[in-house]
Image (cartoon, rainbow, N blue to C red; front, side):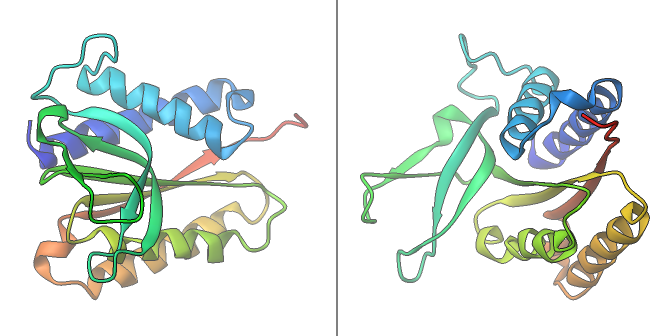
Length: 190
């Protein structure tokens, strides 16, 4: 499977996630819950079985450190990272014991923003901007889950418009590696 095919399966996993959240909003109470749910949905779609991983197929990892390649400073910790186990390289060039990298990877940054958070658009924009950190190393997906309220459409549109502006400013190669999705959670007085 190549990265474009993987992207399609991630899109299906996001649809699965949205369906699950729609049926059971209480499945997500925190960003960690979103990470767990999306990891599970992706694993099912790509056929990743932690008990018996296929070394030549993509696997789902979480909370992997990313370092600035020029000055070896930690600049991010990606929520989910999809890599092939037999293509993972360890680097001992950093202050940490080792850093994982791969020539084929897909970074996914997650954000769960509650209905009463006026800074949700700003926070989502910061995650979209993280693409710069990963662009040389990985495909990148920013996934934002918003609680539904009267401002949902406004917030969602602002996030999507910002993503579009950032993508429009990129070169052709970067555009095909950069994605964003906004999911909705209806909150019924949880």
